[in-house]
Image (cartoon, rainbow, N blue to C red; front, top):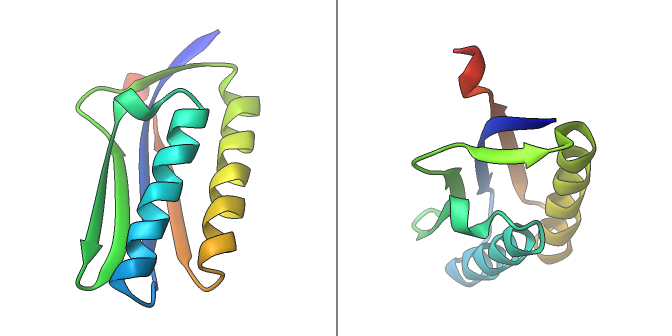
Length: 99
């Protein structure tokens, strides 16, 4: 069964603009690996250094959400903490069909 979801990802506690750029590239790569890059908008901020990603303007359609989301969250955390072990990662799922 497929489900509509919104994804919001915020990464902060980064040490520099360069680190934010590298985190932004890693986020884009994970999104691409999971086939949702075309559904997402990623923004890198240099002051203060942070990265945000949002499903915009429409929800993402995912089949097998429970298994997929667990793997996605693991991939994000592994990839980003390899670059910035101190990064604070806030990943939230929204369910527009329940609103």
